Length: 303
Image (tube, rainbow, N blue to C red; front, side):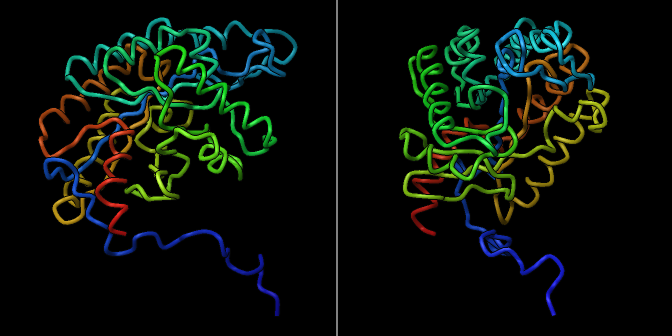
């Protein structure tokens, strides 16, 4: 008798590290590796004024203007580059903490100072695609060109090619292979399935990301309303993983967006998280490239 839905999937790993994950041996004996990811997408969202086929339809509101440029949506996004960026940069500087600025190539090409300022402050600038769009249905030749253009924009702005990549939402079946073929990438974050990195191919690490400790949940229906909602959730995750870290250290990603957490009514949430982390010496706050390099040098060789 045929089973409903066919047989179980054969290409997905639903087991992972199981009950006994590897000891990452984080620097200084840290019980948690913490990565702050600041998404830079302003200027890369879909916009008729930028020559795209349609306008972006999602931010603080859910609405799409489909017959002409949409200054309402464009200026919502522009706020992140014009105002939010500086607040976030200052917040990390106040605690001397590093972050990874995951930047869309078109956003960097439109505003090179964003990448330059982040890089000059000691943060990592990684790649977040060219436009703020998924790659799931993208043709291979187009995706190859998108990767190259994104790398070039970041390299031109900062003097360094990005070592990391993260696709908005769904990657294509080719994305990871094309990154490796392009060369120069140490890691990608196109996975959401673990609390530890893993080796994909020689020299290429997968650093899982997350949508829960993420300010995008301030979007309509996302669950965060007040700044303390964000802070309580992120601090709860940090404390839980620190507890687990006594026997099995883990990694946590906290996602930020210039136009979202950068609003004055929300910045207190980020400030509270940074202050809490600053009081916990058991946490290694690191750029994603540092976590990937550590995993490659200290852990992957033993698996």
